[in-house]
Length: 147
Image 1 (cartoon, rainbow, N blue to C red):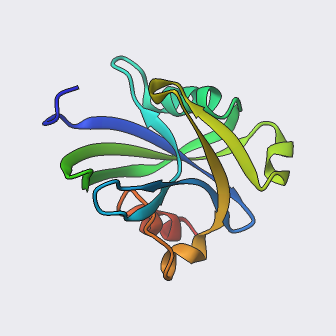
Image 2 (cartoon, one colour):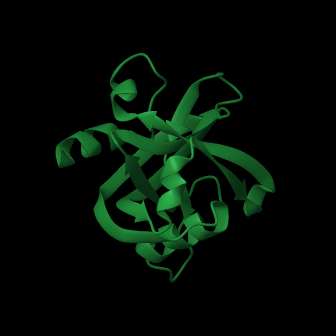
């Protein structure tokens, strides 16, 4: 993908008793630690809802149910010293397998980068305080609006 292109993405917020499932990232250039819900790129010709269901199936090995669109966020950001631009369709959803809510962390795999990572539950209120930011920008406000 060209560096000057806008990347369409779809994320799903899965909630458990005031916590959301996120994974942590760190910008290699700035060292900033931040959090994002799970999801990923929307392929050409793929509906955003189908993309987020596919991403959870691929990364977590889990099926989503009750997938409802919360909104769309435009995200302009810098990562590793490069400008990025995303349009992110944000969904609310739930795990079909309720036993996943009992786990403190989920082992995930990102095939595109051949990378394993951990997703974990983090209280939404943490993002109102000193915890690293929740991205994409505007996501916290979108979650607060739905309450």
